[in-house]
Image 1 (tube, rainbow, N blue to C red):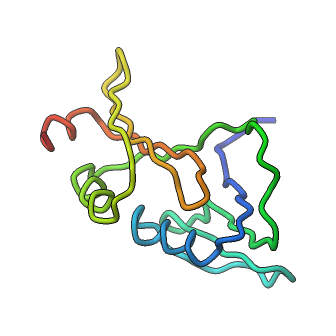
Image 2: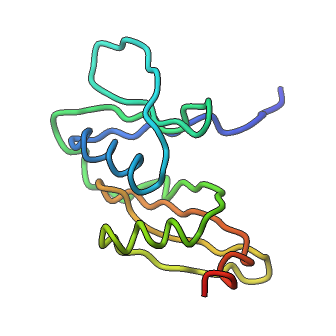
Image 3: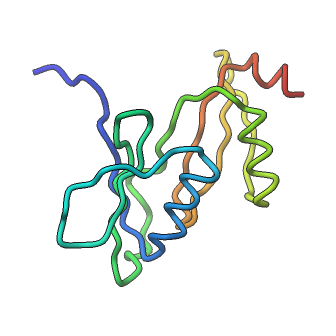
Length: 128
């Protein structure tokens, strides 16, 4: 067997509408086709691939220490993301990765899930 790639993450939420708006408006992803499951949800796409499967639930998930600490995207357009985050007043940090030409933008979605978006460090230099 050979693993080819990570296909998607599945996120349970009581805030389905707000989560969809966050992923569309802040991260610039889009909602796309989803099978007709008998429960509420949305599939969030990067290009032609659904990378986040949101599942609507009625009750908050148990607040325990997560085993999956974050998920991440690789991107371009650091200045656009920073402008969106500032405009929406979303807390975030800009963190260069020691020894490699990557800068991470660390933030949380509506439900508090840790996400980081990785950019080439040249974009930080260009963005100021």
